[in-house]
Length: 255
Image (cartoon, rainbow, N blue to C red):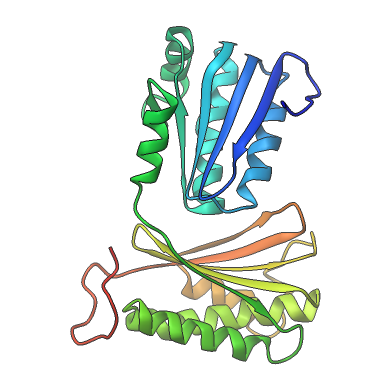
């Protein structure tokens, strides 16, 4: 069944959330209904899908100004899940509206099956998830996980920075929030992403971080940020992987 919407002119039905999210839209997308679409996409993003496909086959119309929501959602999917937003079966009118707002940033396919196939062909993402103890050992446990990941995935060139970053993020979460705390490490498109999630919606403060804290993360990471989730927040940091790993490193190569 379609989820009830605040505006009856737009309905959003979630068919899948992971590893590929699939959302079917029906009705009319207008400036006063885009909030509903954002809300549903945000819920699907809590599952960290590799990609999200929006099936537009039953969409009756898209107001030109409201079409700008699609590139905005694409940026959100990339930032939160390191994934891609893909559109399926847009009508000629929808395509015209999209070309005005997002001519290059969002891929479109004629059918939902084509869009799903494209999503499944996206570069594979490697993932390791661990629950961290809500005590002073959280940082040590997190460093051990990163040590194992860097060995397994031939990322020894990132080991030192990755361990410092994950230790700071884990320690910060435990000291400010307590448990439960979850660590998720992923690799996709030659980026190592470290995520630490907790049950508090209190955003981290760079200036209020204990010790070196987030200032170290800000210095060492290629990029970092914080995203709200359905249960709290996720603080993440990225490290770019060198194109040519050092010779002699153990483990399978990153593809």
